[in-house]
Image 1 (cartoon, rainbow, N blue to C red):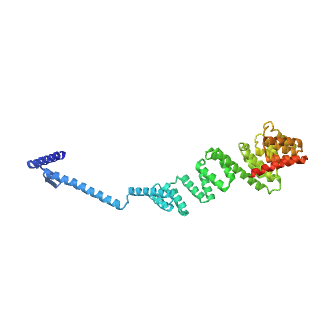
Image 2 (cartoon, rainbow, N blue to C red):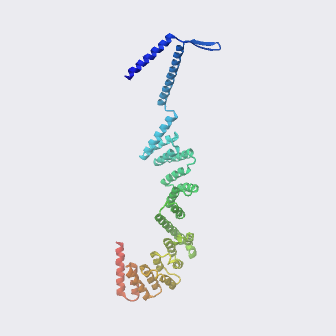
Amino acid sequence: MKITLFLLFLVAVCFGIAQMMVHDSGYVLIAYDRFSLEGSVWSFLLAAVLLIAGYKIITWGFRLLAGSISLAYPMTQKSKRRRAQRQSAKGLIQFANGHWKAAQKLLAHAAESGQAPLLNYLAAARAAHENGDYDACSDYLRKADASAPGADIAIGLTQAELLLARGRLEQALATLKRLRKRSPKHTYVNKLLKQVYLRLHDWQALAELLPTLRKLKVISSDEFDSLNQQAYKALFEQAYQQGKGQSDIEERIRPAEAIWQKLSKAQKKEDYLFYDFVSCLTRLGAEKQAEAVMRRHLSDLYSERIIRLYGQIEGEDKERQLLGAEKLLDERPNDAELFLTLGRLCINNKLWGKAREYLEASLRLRKQADTYNELGQLLAQLGEHEKSTEFFRQGLSMTVALQE
């Protein structure tokens, strides 16, 4: 119905125009200088309509031609960008699937086409590394640096990670030191430095780095304690190796004392560091120096390992050494390890009765093979061979049980 009405309206309009043309064709004159153009109004209107239609047709034709060329030869910036985006996406998919060679090629092409060049060059470098193409890996990193001069931290971290993976520890260390100088509080830079120092066994550098790692919350408190203990145990072992060949006692213990003196006040309050220090002195044959240091700190740095070691070494003044340990009885009246140490020190001072009392008190608190053996030796010396044999038997039984 609507179409019919529209057609009737169109016929009526055409009929009206035809009547107007018959009734009066009109007259138009265009003159300029010696040029003139004249005709009816309707002829000029028809010419205008034809000109507009011709312009539209030509414009449409050019657009159609340009579109055809664009489809055949993707040379426009838009098509290049889309192609680069597709290459980047495909490259990342290939990378995720472990197809390193294909990923390297696609990502490199995407970067060269201007699609996120930094990210694609870095990803291409990783793919080249996994593919074993280390020259290309280095080349991509250089191109990444050229494409984004301000991204040296991101590029440096990628380089350090790849060097670490290849076992190029010294080169990785140099890169990370440069990055840390630029950004001292960068979490990941410091974390990678920790890994490098561990793998290089650079315990001094690791020990110096650990407070920063804890402050930046790169490691937990438990990991800090574990790494700190590992680093200083290794450092004191190095000090032992350096000093053991020296004939002069002062020269022998100098490396260990140097480590101890460099510790902060807080570190010197850690019982495990104190134990490593005095244990090192003892192994170096400096028992008198170790005993003097231990006696001053027995109360505030007490541990079972420390008090046990205290009873196994011989100080310059045996009586003073015993008195130093007995001062702890008021604080620790039920400490089996302390009673064992007191028993040993009484034996050194030839206080046989007192030694027996301390050792028997230790046994009542805790059954230990060492205590049985000490009592066995003491009673054998006192002529109580039957009891001595029984203590030796029980000590041996406990030792065998622990080994099974």
